[in-house]
Image (cartoon, rainbow over all chains, first blue to last red; front, side, top):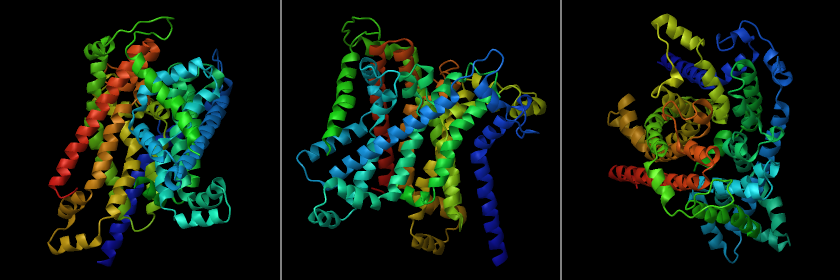
Length: 276
Length: 281
C-alpha cells in the first residue's frame, strides 16, 4: 500500500516534468535553432553540432545584407521598458496611497475617474494619442514610447487595495513624529509592500517589453526601434535567414526569462495576492 | 499628491477621448489639410464592410477555439501542481514561463516549426504522404494562433485555478468520500462545481483577450488567408495607419469597444445565471 502510493507520487513528478518540458519546448527550440549550423535550422530539432554563426551574422551582416542595429535596439528596449515601468510604479504608488489613506477634497471624484478609465477600452484612444505624439514633436523620440505609457490603472488598483490593508495607526503615529507624506511612503509604506511591488514590477515590465503596436506606430527611425519592433519588421526581409532570426529571438526572450527567474522566489505567494 | 495625475489624465485620456469622438464623424485621412464632417457615414460604411464583418466573426471563432483549450489546459496544469506534495512553487513558475514570450518571437518559432522542410512536415510527408499548408488554410491558421495564445496564457490561468483548488475546504472532500464520491466522480461532482469562481474569472479574462489580438496575426498571417485571422485590432491598424483613414479607423475602434463591452456583459450575465442556479451568488 505504502509502496503503491510512493509509485503514484513518483509518476506524478514524471508527469509534471514532462508537461514542463512541453511548456518550455518553444524556448528550447529557439535556443537550439539559434546555435545550429544553418543547413540544420528548422530541419533538425537537436542539431548535431553547435555554432555561433547566426549570432555573428546578426551583428555583422552577410553578402549584400546590411547589419541592422540589433544591439542598439536591445538597449532601446531596456531604456524604454525600464523608464516606463518605473514611472508606472511611481504613479501607482502615489495615486494608490492618496486613494487609500488620504482624505482630501475630490478623492471620490478621483476614484470615479480611475474606475471609468479602467473600464474604458484603450483602443479608442490609439489614433488620437498617435496624433498627439505627432503634433507635439514627440514622434521618433523615447518620449513617445514612455510618456503615454507612464500610467498603469491595473497597478493603481492593486496598490490601492494593498495600502487599504495597512493599519491607519502606523501612519498616524508617523505623522505625530512630524513625518511628511512622502517620508511616510518611503519609510513605512514601501518597506511593507516589497513582495507586491516585486510582482507588480515584473508584470509591468513583461507587458511593456513585448509591446508591439504602439512602439511600432510612434517610431520610424531605425536607431530608435525597440528590439521587439525590429524583430517584427525583419520577419519578412530576413525570411531566408532563419538562424539569425532565432538568435535575435533569444536576445529578446532570454533577458526577461532570467530576470523573472531571479525575482520569482516568492512568486506563488505574491501571485495569490495579485489574483485576488 | 494626485493632482499631477489628473493633469496627466486630461492630456492623455480626456482630450484624446473627445478627439476620438469628433474624428469618428469626419472623413479625415491623416494628411489632407482639410476634411468634412460626414455624420454617421463612417459607421454605416463599417457596417457593410467585408473586413469589419470578418473581424467581428473571426473574434468569436477565436473564442470558440481558444476558450475551451485554455480552460482545459490551465485546469490540468493546476491539478498537476495541486497534487504534488512538494516543489509546487517551482512548477508554478515553470508553467508560467510561456507568459513571458513576445508574440513576435513565438511567431518566429511557429513559422519555423511549420516551414516546408521542418521535422514536423517531413514526418507528415514521409508517414502519410501529406503536404499540409498550415498557415495557408483558413481553418488551420486561426487554430494555430489560438494554440499560440493558449500556450502563452495557460500557466497564468492555472494560477487562478490553483488558488481556487486551494480554497476548497478539506471537509467537503471528506463528506463526499463518505457519500461514496471518489476519483472521477469526486472530480466532476465536487471539485468542478466548487471551482465555479475560478471558471468565471478565467472565462471572462479569456473572452476579453480575444478582442485585443494583434501581434500574432500581424506577424504570422497578416490577417489571411481570406480574412480567417483578421482581428479587430488588425482592421483598426489597417484602416488608420495603412490606408490612413483616421476618421473611419476611429469609428471602427468605437464599434469594436461597443461590441467588446456588450459581449463581455452577455457572457457575465449567462455565467452568473448559470452559477446562481447552482448555488453561487
